[in-house]
Image (cartoon, rainbow, N blue to C red; front, side, top):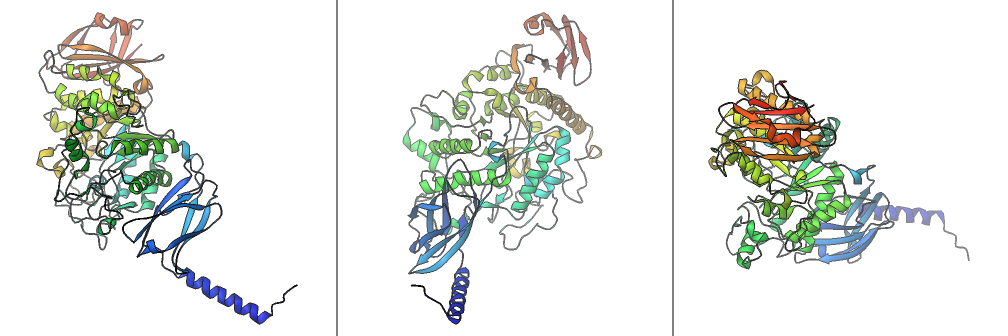
Length: 620
């Protein structure tokens, strides 16, 4: 039977429906929904969402959307959290509502969006040995935006007179100096963390994160970060984002109301980690020592996260993927690689690399021996079968060797032989050519200081770092001979880049603002890097080196097309070099040209090598 509805009834029904919808729309959103949005067509088809709001665990989540379903709802100890696991494998890009129902009424709702992925985003390239990395600390590099020094209710305000305070460098400052970085010959930028660090003090470095999804407003906005990635890409520069999973900031919003009692490692009284990274790989380790290393706090301001909590593990993994997909970065530098649980770190890296097969992750395993560092590069033949799935790790053993090699008097086991002996252990690494090599970073003494402020040694060390195997990384300010000693405080070796702020008396971003020695080193780096950029033999060409003799070190980079010979003479006096010793590498060549000086050598008999110098010779 057909039922006829009179027009007034229909009008009233429509009005009531509108009122109900309006009331529904007026319901408050939860305080936090993380991640705030996601993407369709990802490799992994499940999605964990953390939702935070007053007594939200007493509600029932309902999804109104096509091809999206709730697999699991997890209620935790705090009544103010819900963790939702969604199946989005068949979902199309678009928006859907998540309603949180209590007693038949909608208490909260959130309009969630699955965005469309950019074409080719799954195949974005990482960084590799064809690159050279420039490390910078955003707060100490350059100030571009003059309007975001102090932002309302942030706990720490700008105080440039305080070595350990915030100085006001920001993302716009980095954008403004991209052409400077490019002119030096760098193809990648690794920046220290830019996420919110809303704490009372010591926030400039960025390693005490209080919001994993938002850029610190004193540095800029998420949109500013996207512009940085885009502008860098226009110049052929990739961006490597610094991430931290071992700890968060003590004033992170969740610290007032932890989801679970095991979200962080808690002690009866403050307990600091022992920093004994060797305990992770030690087959004889005492469990108490291992626990202190893994569960102790890195710093009083940085609570230690427990990645064995399934919900936290999922949160951290997805946060990495969110930033990769959202911003288009090309790599991740993972802080304090050994300090979180190694099984979780392997799961994380494997997850990321499955999502982005050509991506690059470099781990910070600050350990002094190749046998320890190699444990953390993916696919190493480890005694316990551990696979980190990491593309790269920092070569800390070579870092120590560089400092010692150019400072010591030569003997059987001192001087340049330190470089040789360290590289001779490359058999321990699955791929030594993908290690990141460096002479200093934001946590160490400055390289120029370590080399006793000797410009000639500095140039030799840089020649080595920019021509041996691996991915070279230079810390901002090395090119202008910055000094600093870690024992005098981190602010001492993290000084502002002169000229990065309006009104600075010196502008070292310009040739006119640098002194003679600074320009010598600046030009040295620029010449080598701009040569290296287009010289594939210095990327993945084989390395052949000869045992240093009389503190002269000779090595070759070669492939089917090119051969480059590098000579380091770490003696005050000129040295006669008998070239017959290197015949197996020079056979078939009759001439060599030094790309640094332009000097040519005809024949391979005896060469006179100037004292305290380096040569980079193209063989013809």
